[in-house]
Image (cartoon, rainbow, N blue to C red):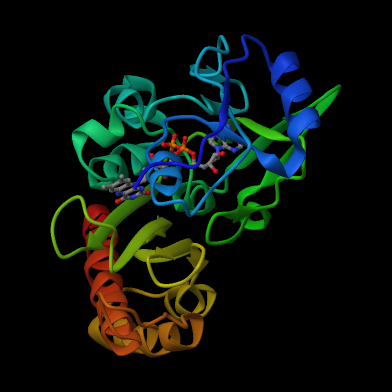
Length: 275
Ligand SMILES: Cc1cc2nc3c(=O)[nH]c(=O)nc-3n(C[C@H](O)[C@H](O)[C@H](O)COP(=O)(O)OP(=O)(O)OC[C@H]3O[C@@H](n4cnc5c(N)ncnc54)[C@H](O)[C@@H]3O)c2cc1C
């Protein structure tokens, strides 16, 4: 199948981009790495009147360390982030997760975003004509392909707080083949205090229409050592956090089971790292 014909624009500045967004409204779609949008166009799941290619806008691909944390430009490619020493040092969870995104060819074009921002307590910067606003990641993701962006806004970057001393990070996912979308995945962070876990952040993906923060499982483990009994209690609590969908790839029961497996694995590694 081929896309429905569309107009193609390649603005050189953010100001031009905002003009185009104003002109086309809902009929204009931004093109970044194209790894999701182009298949959607080809399958005619999306049929915008105009595609607005933002790849030539300068500085949107920057990876910079600032006093507030790591700033990742919206156009930073997944493979550039994977190789960045700044990301490895200050956002190790992103470095650990990126090799799981698709395949190398996809990461060479695909740009940053997603559940990691949630696990890291990141902020998404949305630019619009005449200004910008910051949206905390918890509020940003709304559902499949839906976000808190208002008409006329584009993501210009993500601010990731620097990884603080004493924190541990863990990432794992279960997929049928490496590079496939995960049946279930977990990005986790915690601080270790005298062998017990504190300030836990468990964010599951692949188990809902948006990344899911598992607050009940976090509470079940908070302030405790990760022994078998506590892990079993956290696994039961996790059932209350997740309401996974069933589809051709796996039933809700399978996804719940995989989520519990991931919880046990990742928490085990977090606790080991501190022993
Ligand atoms: C085979 C395959 C496997 C994949 N596996 C994974 C995986 O395991 N995990 C994973 O996370 N992803 C996976 N992906 C998706 C991949 O990571 C995409 O790159 C990513 O989802 C979208 O990034 P992109 O830069 O390609 O965006 P595009 O496809 O260019 O755009 C996607 C959407 O975001 C909008 N958009 C783009 N940039 C902006 C912006 N700056 N501001 C506002 N809106 C914007 C576009 O208008 C469009 O609606 C896979 C893709 C493929 C093809």
